[in-house]
Amino acid sequence: MRILFIVPYFPTRIRTRPFNLIRALAAEGHSLTVLTVAGDATELEEAVALRSRAMRVIAVPLGRIRPLVNIAQAMATGEPLQAAYCWHPGLAKTLQTLLGDETFDVIHVEHLRGARYGLLAKKVVDGIGATTPIVWDSVDCISHLFRQASRQSSARFNRMVTRFELPRTEQYESRLVSGFDRVLTTSPVDRDALSDLAVGRGRIPSPIHVLPNGVDLVAFQPDPSVTREPATLILSGKMSYHANVTMAVSLVRDVMPLVWSVRSDVRLTIVGQDPAPAVLALGADPRITVTGAVPDIQPHLARATLAVAPIVYSAGIQNKILEAMACGTAVITTSAALGGLMASPGIDLLVEDSDQAFASAVISLLESDHKREAIARAGRAYVVTNHSWSKVGKDLSALYQEVQQEGARAFCLPAFDKKMVSLGEV
Image (cartoon, rainbow, N blue to C red; front, side):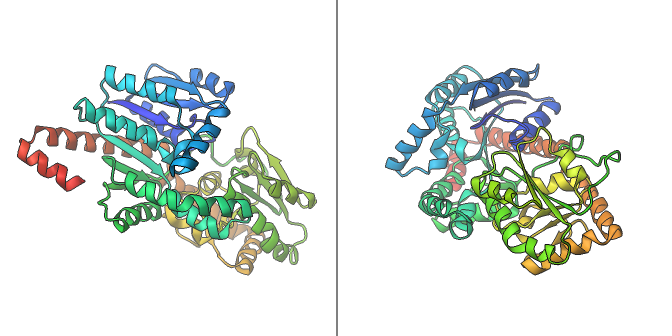
């Protein structure tokens, strides 16, 4: 199939979903045109490296001024800031030219930040009378995330911003979920939240499919040559992201004192790029190391005794948990992380919600090699079975074929029947 894949931020290993979906689709034999924006010169160079015989990459530099202009315009129009942030007129013009000059079997649009490009693509496709289906990968329900952050974020500024954005985002997402041929999410929780948004405003949602994230099982695997450091916990993730900041702060403030009261030797390593000031401040405690960005997180996961993820609020699927499990590192998390996972609590990982129960679980696994290793093995097996990118790519390919065939059948219907189909999908 010829796929036009629109990403509102450059796909890198950090932005794991688009990066690995693109690679998995290319491995399936599809021909891809990736349309994206690059944040800086380094990403423009990476665009060259990403190109291959089966992949054309068209990247437009976003720059620093354009997002600020977009935010100012969105403030005046009522559009969500997230939806406007990555808009670039040059990329929009390139998209219009591509759709006028070439034929694609399917158009894939990533995230709320890319939805505006998806709406433009739909306008162009409809205008030329084409039947090219458009799949919007919402990834997460951003309204669902903002609703939680507006109440639970540890940073007052984040609470204020998400409260401001929430009604705008709810209105916008409720329209989007009815505006494309298919909608994807990473978890059933986000699927249901998007559906509820549309139905609550009298709209009929498009078919919404759950397409979970995968894990690079080569990059993330146990390393028998590495000896795990004793009594060492790891917490990972992008540490500028407000949900991760809240998680790190609450872990150190509420859970670690309970752990240290029993095991004073326990150390915590916080790994992830761009740590916020609140996270950097945690490193003042000599028992805590804040690494910032690292070239490769796998060695840190392989050396840790346990991975902890006391998630306070979330949307989608937690890559940090899947990566730790893939490395054969036992994981302790909260029920907020389970919306996108089919893992079995108590077998594949431990799940505790209260501070005391979470701390007790940490101490229990630190003091039982047998239990810790059993959970680590089960966790690795779960990820291998359910979250390989190869499997995710095959599932996405099948969905593309399904929606393309539906479009072809609708195009071949008599005029009266096509009208009925149209009425039924509005």
